Length: 433
Image 1 (cartoon, rainbow, N blue to C red):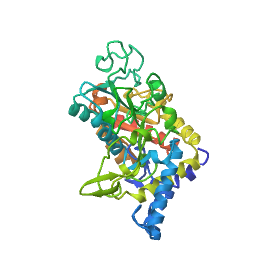
Image 2: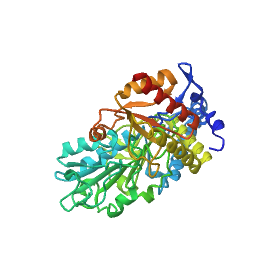
Image 3: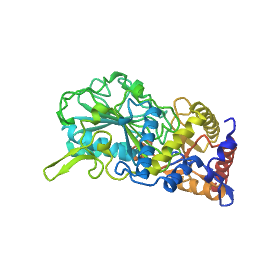
Image 4: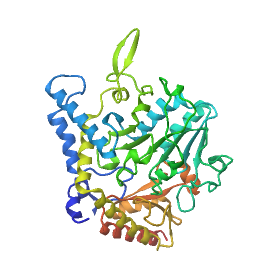
């Protein structure tokens, strides 16, 4: 980046030292660090505007409501939604995907229907569909990957019979839901969503009052964007999906603010996910009338301060510019990928080039447990990485490994940090040998 050292000063936590060493934070796929602008937005809300929203007519309540709804407008513009009403605030991607599985999936997926996902999914986009399939008697199928960590989506390409019908197609007439990630949190692979969905006609609605009344038409498409939004500019209308979910905390916003975008005409047919205050128009002993979208899906008091922080994070990213961010991250990713491949003891999982990938690299070091790698890097070099299955058990089973080490970069990471990381890996190998 043109002035990366200045940018790094925007992030207070990056100034820390770990075991006497400058912190090198390579765990951005788990959560990103927060710029001062975001921290100020959160503290500023509590210091100056703290009140509940959509309930009071006093000044603080109106200010808090304005902050909350203004961020909804920001998010809608940021992802190119048709309208702010299509943006639902949740806590995180996990809650967003469970909302869709519960409110759309439970009433619409029938026995012998199928749900198609992929082998590279985070548990958040796998377990809700697995449970739904078990509960409703549907089939759950997972698209496989090739040796380069890319989805096998072409006709006849997939060798796993569980992921295609007899004609070799990934999706068929019985497919009710397609749920896939835009970017893998382990492999770094960016999936070609538009290409995958090019043969899937848009989900069409019939007259009716709930998803259960819809015919066995075209499948509903749900995209997990948690690992894509921090790195890519997302346009939900261009992707061709029906739902898109992401978390604020992975895109430099606070923990506690996430987003579910959905096509309004589908949201309007879905029953509420949670019940309580704020999601009703009228309620009596005789019955209840629920609020319009999006309020219908936002029961209870939300984390308004975290939503304010999400708005500040969007402003911050737009100030830097996505082209600048992408160039920095991919340049560093190219360096790290290339140098790791020169170390014989290192095995990398996923694409070996920066084409169609984000700067998340998972690997193992021969004969050294991933947890030992992570502990050594932290204790001796102040480097934070993730070790384990990264909430992607089926993928690690497919790769034939119990766990892996993940180094995930953000635009504030530097070439110098990567050089230290590479030195640390070589030192690790020397010490353990």
